[in-house]
Length: 51
Image 1: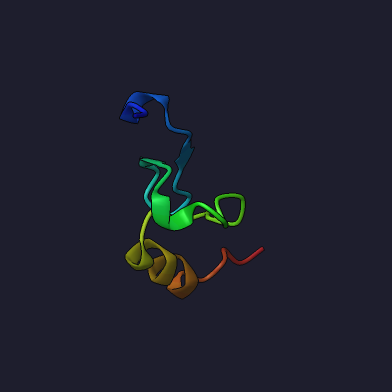
Image 2: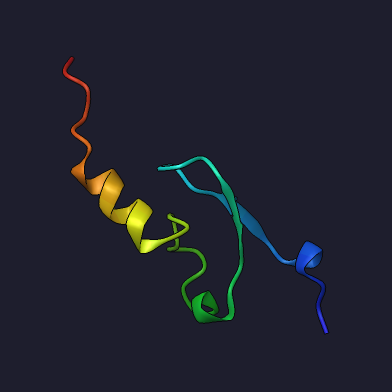
């Protein structure tokens, strides 16, 4: 049994919080960027800064 502290971590670019690997993301961990659907939707709604 793996301990939660031994699992890989990433930081969510939308909220800045760290999140850990989930069994649900086993096959696509490299593509996972956001900690939740809410953060994914929120980031998509934000407009890029005008240059």
